[in-house]
Image (cartoon, rainbow, N blue to C red; front, side, top):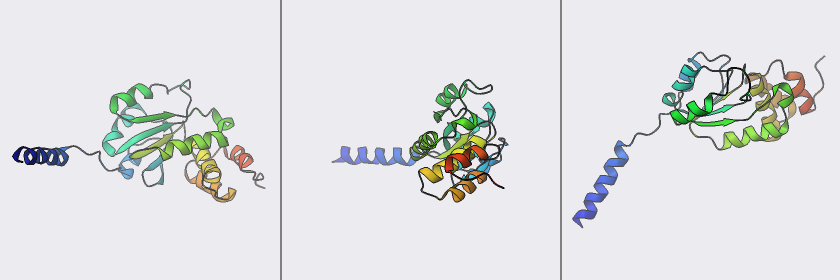
Length: 176
């Protein structure tokens, strides 16, 4: 009985002293200076391309998942997989080849990655435009939101130059 109590005490001590991941700090992630960083919703930031120093700070700020929409062949990217492994980050690459990659299929891939995330999540491309486009398409195809409302969500998440392509995919006319 004594040994069982001693074992239970050790387990309880280990549980109390084990280091839990930090709570996601959205404002601190926005303060890193990543181009186009925008809070989409709590624990979800849309952004342009980060540098290695910014990327390395994410785990300490409670951001445990990074979803990169740039193909690894684009200049300035492709290094993240190795760095994420070193840092213990979950890293997902969904290669979106410019505006032509803003498709329902890629929106569903983003939705799956976001449903499987842990901690805070950063979704990035070069400027935030592709992120905003896929956020809009995800809101419509996966969230059932009307096209105009989905488009507005995309704009808030960084959609700009690719809006005409997103409008086509959503079945919306060109603005007058």
